[in-house]
Amino acid sequence: METISLPRKTREFHNHHFDSTIWNDFDFREDDIIIATYAKSGTTWVQQIVSQLIFNGAEDLEVAEMSPWLDLRIPPKEVRLPALQQQQHRRFIKTHLPVDALVFSPKAKYIYIGRDGRDVVWSMYNHHANANDLWYQALNDTPGRVGPPIERPTEDIVQYFRDWLNKDGYPFWPFWENIKSWWSLRRLPNVHLIHFAKLKEDMPGEIKKIADFLDIDIDPAKWDAILEHCSFDYMKKNSIKSVPLGGAFWDGGSDTFINKATNGRWKDLLTKEDNERYEKMCVENLGEDCARWLNTGEI
Image 1 (cartoon, rainbow, N blue to C red):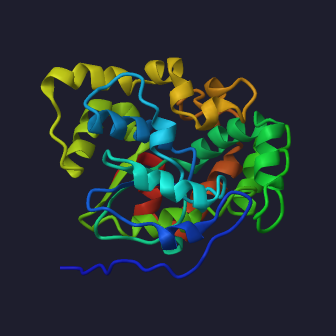
Image 2 (image 1 turned 90 degrees about the vertical axis):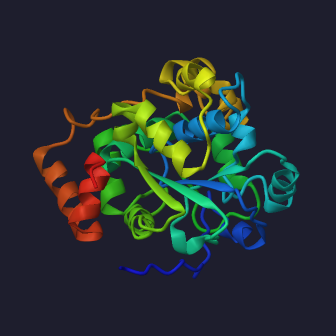
């Protein structure tokens, strides 16, 4: 049987968004849940699912406050860590780091969400193109930024995709290493991989798998409420609860952050050559098995 060693942190990751050093000071609890993803892959959706499982279908949960993005450098760790220490409920924390830039603990359970990179970019573009001055000020002007500022995007979404592909995640952070690092841990007992397309295809079945992984018994009397509260329509209506600062960083507010939750918007815009290049790079960077999972959800 293949033996997989627990990963160790080997580097720090800094840019306009990240300060990975916070993980060095984070005090894990036995039942912590870490929700990991590259970004724009269904993170908020899975945070909502986990919150519903923990709180048994409760209404009006302040998910964005309950489940912070730990390695986002604002607010600083001197603010974020004490707030997490004070939480009494089972903690569920978000990260966008690759595995080797965080502290991996055997105490925690890790859920990683994958999504076709083309869908990621289309969602990322909406996120980036609708960001307002407050977003740029927070990321670029708050003391502690390492590296160049993030700039406003081109108006051409296809060119945005090509730049992202050519420069490996530009202007955010590298894509391939993030996917590959988490894929390599898929057989660890405290790691569970899910896929955006599978959540869309069978949300009830995927929620049950997540509950089993987290050792949470679903209350049958609350099952319908859990499903309703995890639906896109419910999350859209209550988006102010799920989005950082209630959506203050985006034109259109929290409704902009929780956009369409659809896949395939790139199909009528990318050329055959664009798609072939993306698919070729998937295999070259990830291997055939991981590339198939990333683009289809099939393992």
